[in-house]
Amino acid sequence: MRDILTNSSVINFLTSLADGDLNIATEFVWVIIATALSMVGGAIGGMLLAGKDIGYQFSAMLGALFAPAGAIPAIILGLAVLNWLTNY
Image (cartoon, rainbow, N blue to C red):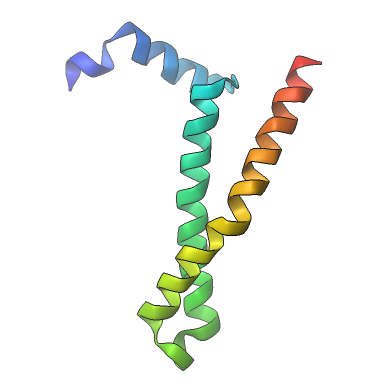
């Protein structure tokens, strides 16, 4: 584990991720992070909305599956706009 964190390419990647530099690698990581967060939010929302009616586990599963369907296009569009704004 120590060898991975001391690798110069990993250090450069983590630095560009923390600095807010938008390239294809950092955008891919941000999409993965935002998708995971939208799945958590969708599961919580599904449990709050339909937990008593169809069961908490099933509503959480449905919420986690359907939340990224709307979030991923918005995330990609937002990252494209940010990339365009930083270039001009």
